[in-house]
Length: 184
Image (tube, rainbow, N blue to C red; front, side, top):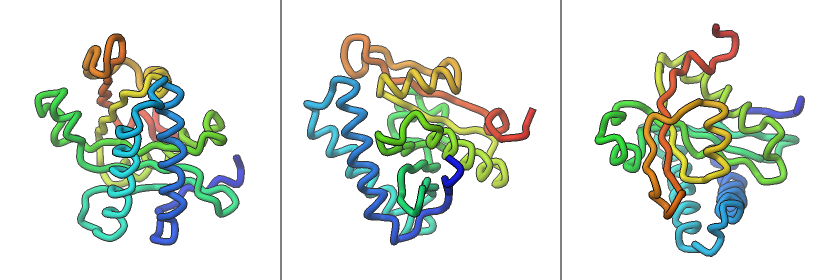
């Protein structure tokens, strides 16, 4: 992945980022056996589109994105911003002041090739340089949870059976310094 570029998105990237959300969110639901939840899929896609657009048109939105590009094609996204209402609800507002790592989406054909890890590492560098010490993240996608358990360890909180029997929603609380390249 030598030709991978991680950068801040521009307004010219909006359409391509929307395509990443549409393809990867739909794929995640399908892989989790939830492809039939079309209204949930559409809601998730629209919320990510709105978040990205808001971050680009309103510098004070509190959320910022990084995107991954290969050969000038946008193939992935990650964001950092205020923690979500779900995280606040699950943790009784214990993590309300902690920013959330989110919107990590990579086109299905580029998944498993280090793009997501490169996005996370780049975001960690930005957060570290900005003085951010902690972040949280959450996931209800089983496949993503498997990756997050491997990468971030045990969750801070588990909402058991939240999405149905044995379909948990997990929240992690992490230190930025643990994920910055070159840190001990």
